[in-house]
Image (cartoon, rainbow, N blue to C red; front, side, top):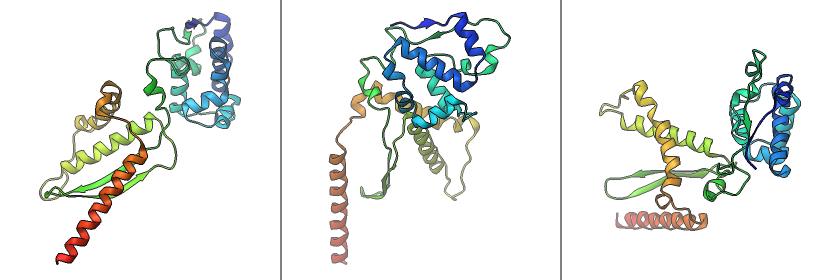
Length: 238
């Protein structure tokens, strides 16, 4: 079903509500446009990365100032301007038409799309591997650890930006070990690069193949065992 305009009556109802009631009102409208099961507190909270209990508290007004990140994700899920959740949107008091939902040809979270890879990557753990690479073609894994909890693309992009920033700072260290501080323009690059890197996953999937984690773990363990044998042989030669 295509998106639709909210009526003036619905607009006036929203104007009289707080932010939590507006979220519930629009969530129920989305449920009437699509499958109600896709717009329960359970389903919506899973898509935006919070618990159903947290979403219920927001809708009841028990959480008065939900984070911008949560409101942004809800607005994106409903395909409405984020401003519709603010009191300022309804001032001065005259009707402002806006739409809710998606046209049939627009991608969304709850109707089938060709972009199955993106929809399957809404929740994931993040693994960090830090290595030393020596000038004799040898390397050492210093850290290989994954997060305990699941995250979304926002966390991944933020992590990538911090890592890229760290690499940029390391590469900027001069020979006398004094960091060459980066200007404001350069400081903006890591996040842009992280966004580009994330989008490239879907634009060039062959460059970022997905595989079985157990296969990677076996390869990593094989490498570690290879390193142990080299260390043992080196000590015997000494």
